[in-house]
Image (cartoon, rainbow, N blue to C red):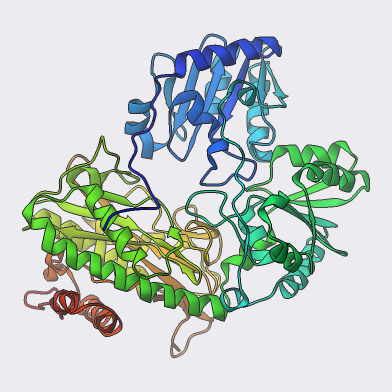
Length: 615
């Protein structure tokens, strides 16, 4: 049942080869006249998931987390990670070579000011840093009376002798039945935005934007159907798409070339410089455009206009076809998740299941839909104390047996042509403690507060993030991650510009799909998270309203574990919401699952016992 999965459970390499690699890098830096070098976990597009050929940080340090920066100087080195990876980094990185620093509390720039010797020359690859990132490094170097030096080619590439080749995933057309708008119409809208921004051309450096604009999908990075590529869209004239032609079948190339010129990647830098030579104003995406791109424009005499790529917002606001696809994907995915939850409840009490067993089973149920293209991210499946690690990924080394008394947290998603899913459920194995039930219920209250929120058009995610935390705060509790992130349409499961978080500055617009995922984590004990995807919609009419109002429609369909709920902590309205949600889950999914699962689903979605509830 558990064969041919999209994800693996291999233990990372760790830092066994670190010492000779760091020594080789230092020798290469001396040869180039450099004092040190900055190694981010990044590719030329600032992608979340990297192709194996771009994992330079992992090659050098052994660290495989999703966010980190290393700095190697002649006599010292450091690696910077955020709070998600403080345990993992100590397992994977040789602390005798790299000091372990906090990416947020003591960022690389602060470390450089204290550790760079005067007169030092710090190298960096301008293709792997944004303009803003490079400016921060340059400022830190200046404070240390040192210099930041663009370094091409990347010195690690000269040392990494068994580096995998760049990916050549085939490109597929994303049919209009899923996209809902053809490329020509998107280009008309985009050119109007480029004109509004008073730019002569837009550089599309985020492959998500390329995929959306040209209605294509790829297979170059794990779990996100991206074709690694760039594009230039002039205010007037034909755009150009820069992509290795070996990814394109003749029929695909022909369809793409109806709207754009297809050029080899080697031409990209030349064409960017030509925009500068023509004294053009070039719009660069501040989140994904490499510092190298800005230099190519300005050194040739052009000007740059840094800011948000307008595609980012256009892509985030889903059209009617994409919304219909999201609903269909959630329905299909919900049936697979319910089959898993029923299976888990039958098997877990025996005490024989492991975290890997659960991950493999859930992916297998999704595969049996016949529609699964990939998982949307590696499944987070934490039993007991592992559930308290927010971005935990099970390996054969960490794999834990699921035992009676555990809470089991499973956060997962699927990639389907009609939509991307992301769902978290926390399940009791055996009888939960009173503390577990109380804290789960407080998380649920926060989840319901977001699900039922009504807010003026133009409200940002930062303004409503606290809705999810009120009940936890009242008990002196909280969680250290955002409440929600944007979700793409058969694209990235983490999509900008909107989020429900303390830093969520973008307005939540109708048509945006976001996650609603408050949580609570007790270190070394258990974790709780309840996640559904929600669609931003027009709110039902409110008598006397003076502003347009928005609300959320919950898209995800799966039971929330009733055994973990203390009804005494819920209001009548909260119980009404939960009962209505469960009735909807039952009506939608019962016809799609087998008889054994339907038997399980009926009590799992029954109305909550209201005895002893709060007023």
